[in-house]
Image (tube, rainbow, N blue to C red; front, side, top):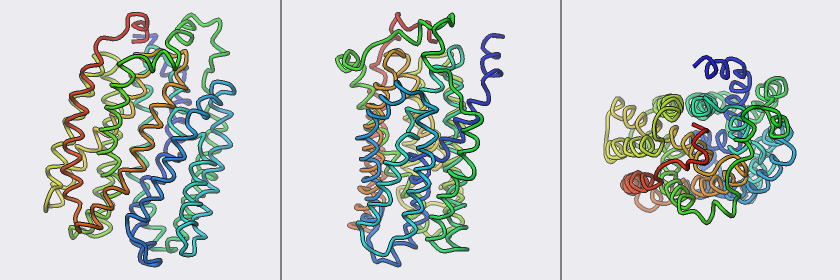
Length: 408
């Protein structure tokens, strides 16, 4: 126990820096701010919601294509050298978005730039840093680090609404672009110093870093495809709801401030889900925990089907956010547990590519359902089925491989 506590006490600056880096990353900041920008931008340019949300599809698609390359860069040069320049590139992408003049190609250029210039800020960068730096408390360290997504989901909508009301949507994009430059990059420069594989040769647990399956070996395992498909189904639900939660709440009669508060509950629950699930994964069978977590959002989607009070909307948002927070943590933990750390960056990058495709496809699909039906209800029903399917699939992962049992 003392060794476990010492690991967190010794490396807490890395956890803090990773958390802050995740807050302002290409897979989080654009995702949790686009909902507050839908109304102002589409009103000015006359775009449909599906057209505007398709920017996330384009951005996520590029993220999916580049993730294997990012994994290779991290294995070769280390997470720090990849993250620092990418964080600045992310800010440049937001600055480009502020110059849009009504042509859709400019929208895609801006969000494409966010994905490409900020490619080194995707989850594989942060989870690889934690996975190679923590061994006894890896689950909790991952959970604490990944709370950055929940913090972003809680704060970013309010920040974006304030920026829009004070400076317009162009000023909002500039304000978002300043976050990586002014807040995040200095923190990463001083505190983001993960232990890389090359530094662990003499470490007593160095064998864990070099054990595991190669990417091709993992791809031949049924567990790889079970994990990939469960991620696919779960994130189709989470990603469809996340960016559309804000506009769906305003459609139901809530004010923009109330809608931002409901999305903040979503973000807070992500934080709670990260920490709780990370703690439990260090002690219990992670697929069982995943199953329970994926059953929780079915309560929320059923509440969102039809009209609801502010209190019920907040409860629904909490159940979905808790599970969404747990899922990314679980994906990182299960990838290390079942496939080892030998080719972790490459394996995780492929899994992340699936997540990225879902994160881009689902928001546009949900928005398209709204454009056709005038309601998000059909999307909530489909999401219920996706969560149920994923919760059953994850149980078939089976016992942890004995070769990697020491990673627990």
